[in-house]
Image (cartoon, rainbow, N blue to C red; front, side, top):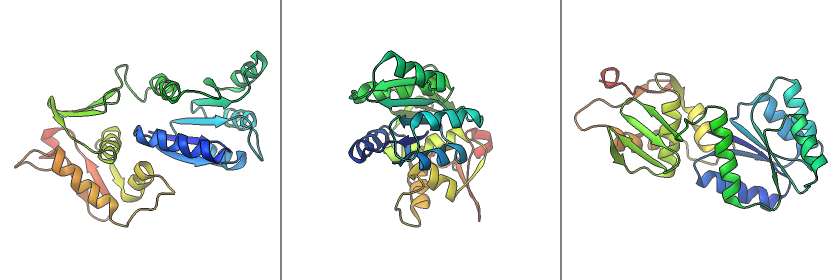
Length: 229
């Protein structure tokens, strides 16, 4: 899941980005309104976390611009203002939720999960399934035919991306962008290495891999055992 974070307080933005990444979200963070507005309109995100008081362009103006341009991505507003008028202004502009600073990290994560469920990113049980695989977000566990698989955080994100795009070819560039983020500083063969690690953990001995290499393009995840063999 991709989240756009628009927050001008550098320390808070850094802390929130780290928190979200630790909870398996891919995060793009920018620190001014114009940059946030450009990304919200030109890129694809599952949730936007948006501060109201921003340089160059306010969060309310960003939100109104998104809705006027048909961008219906769920938006969680962050603000130090807690008057009824402020909340009404944000909600009337098209916000889906509203969180007042300072807030507890657990509440932020709960609101992000709620927005995810509302938009259908997760099922009601916070889990997705593909073939023999079940990925549970509430417990951060993965099973294959009911058997638990021990994955690292990055492997978890990679499998989630494959499961959400089953039977579709994903280029290495898309995988890098969705799992590591557009600004990540990673070595050139990071995707190949992590696909290799993931295959070793999810594939069954003596059987073809669930992740096929499409030469010169990328990778294809086939969750149906009859397709993968």
